[in-house]
Length: 388
Length: 134
Image (cartoon, chains in turn red, orange):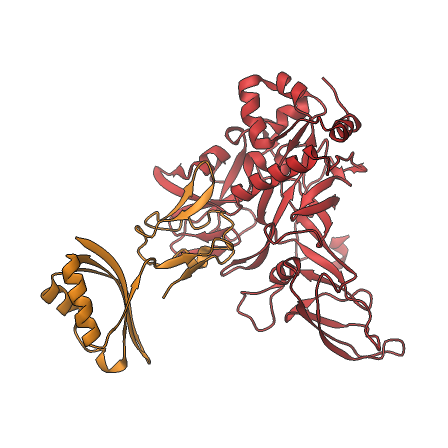
């Protein structure tokens, strides 16, 4: 069995494409087999909704009268990066409000913009001959700005370590609140619904791939930061953080349901992003991977009380175990929590399936493949000579 | 037997009253104190009360007479359903399993009957959907 993206798109146009979510297809393949499923199903949709710190938006405010070359910009008192053209800025999700106790940040500004609210823009400048204005204090919204698009350097991580805490005190981490003495376990991936786990070697996903992003439509822009391919696999899927996507998409058309400011006390602000990727079933191999179930997908369990990048996994846990709510660890039953919303992951995969079935969303061939051989380096304190 | 949740407020002049003692002794109530504090503006006491419905009613009358502000609570915490993403971060934090991940809907449900007002879920909730009602 073989089919092409163009054949699938023709079926979408004709209104007879068959789409299943990655969750549905996992059980369908278990009962009917890969061969039959591959023959019957054209597209498998995936979804994930979790904290994606490496997110942010490029904004163009338009020119004021007289014009200003902005050198310092805040949005609702959250600093934005403006070391680019005069009225362009980048608001990063984790940037914190000035003088705030880590509770409000760039993610909140982005969520407010997506919700249609106005945010307060303050900018200052030294003034130049061509940009004489030195200060401006005004309000902007998605309606008033020329461009406002997310450009997220790292989204939809292909798997992620689960966390626990062996120490004597509660830890406040980006993996949430970790109770002392292995008091709980938290995990982040959507497992069997997670986009990059369902096409583990990224055969069908590459630069230019059209995706569901934050409720609207987006695209894969590049490899995500910390993209790596040299990770141990089980059933063909990596058992730890591996590939990731840089994504881009217009904030207009997104929804606060899928672009949500998060606050992890003791750590900081992050952005809850909803990402969904359609996987064209080109052959049985694509279907086999897309149908991997929570029983076949594993995450390493890391002790976050070890404050080093060289943390060895305590063990590997399947997403079926993690999702069951209880895991046995050192002879003790430990409860688990997910940081990503399985409900929203499912809603994303279902929404994407609907959009495809309704002919509103066509599939794409990658313009270029993402790297097939990448490792991740470390940062050392080194001399100028050692760095090159 | 009835079981109710109350938040009592005391002005500074009556913080020395042995209110709980009276509730136990005179009205035969079983009191479970969940939170208690005294500050500049007075004191607050969060408690669960168990006993005969008639006794609870009479005790409430006594408290009113003693100038204690009595507020009956349906729940200790409130989950904002619009804000909640149903991630489930709170699930393993709650010591009494008052926050439950329902299957197969994968929605988080708050069971106010089980809640002991410890507040541990509040700073664990990433979207800030859970707030104390007190």
